[in-house]
Image 1: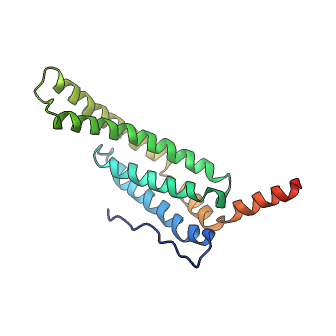
Image 2: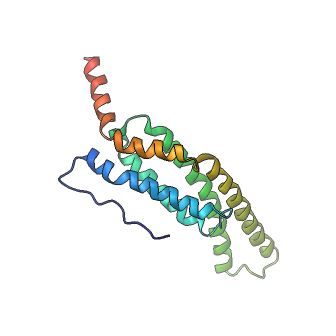
Image 3: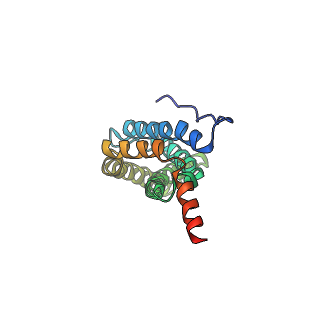
Length: 168
């Protein structure tokens, strides 16, 4: 899948306008990539790309959380859990590559460890594909969050300001 360029910050736009202009597309691209990479039970090596995309989308949304308010926390929690699951798969593959690079192939027991790591990564990738379908594949969910990112940028700060002024 073609990588998309990160949204460009427009200096003459407000932070909320920049969020509306970039975050919905970033989230939509994340979804498309996840669908593509989990379509056939997920290849552990390919899922690393989705892990990075998850991290980037999550960090981007976190940077604008004050603009959106508390409701965004639910999406951020889903992204954290997704990133954690993908991290476990990535860790198993990275450990296997490290062992091979360090010359553990052919060592007593090393092949068993490497086989275990590969099997674990494949099993977790299959489980992740199911997780993706359960948590992320619903189009209603996609529309809800993309629409939210477009409509509510800037409302979190206004709500906070209302609460602060109500306290005085």
